[in-house]
Image (cartoon, rainbow, N blue to C red; front, top):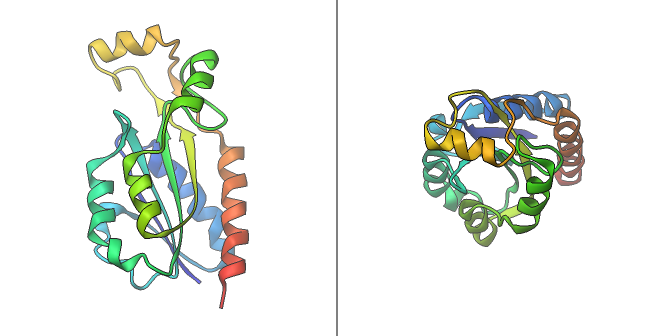
Length: 176
C-alpha cells in the first residue's frame, strides 16, 4: 500500500514526528515522507497521514494551502491527521495544570474540521513539540513563562509510536 506522510513544520518538531511515523509504517509497505510544500497531488497514494505545527490555534498556512490544493483527491482514501503544538494528548511544554485545562477546551484546528467534512479522517492526534529559547520572541516569551512553560523536547515518542501502530492496523484493514 502506498502511503504519504506529509507535514508542515516551523522549527522542526513536526518534521521529527512525521519522520518517526514514516519509520514506523515502513514495515508495512511503500511510505513516502514529504514536506507538504513539495506535494502537488495525492492521486498516487492509497492512504495519507498529514500533519502540521500549530501557530495561534491554526495549522501553518502551507499545510492549509496544500490541503486546499488536493482536497478533491482525498475522497476514498483513509486519512489520519496530527497537530503539533505546546500541548499534546500526553505531554506538554506548559504547566501540567494549564495543559489539562487546554486539552479539554481546545478545539481541533479549522483545517482538520474542514478535512472531516470532505475526507475519510480516521483520527486526529495532538502531539507536543519541542521549544527552545527564542522560539517565542518578545512578549511571547513572557507569556510562555507565565503559562509555566519550560524549554526542551516534550514529544512523547511512546505515544507517537502507539498512534502509528493504530494507523498500521488501519492500513492492514484497508489493504486490497
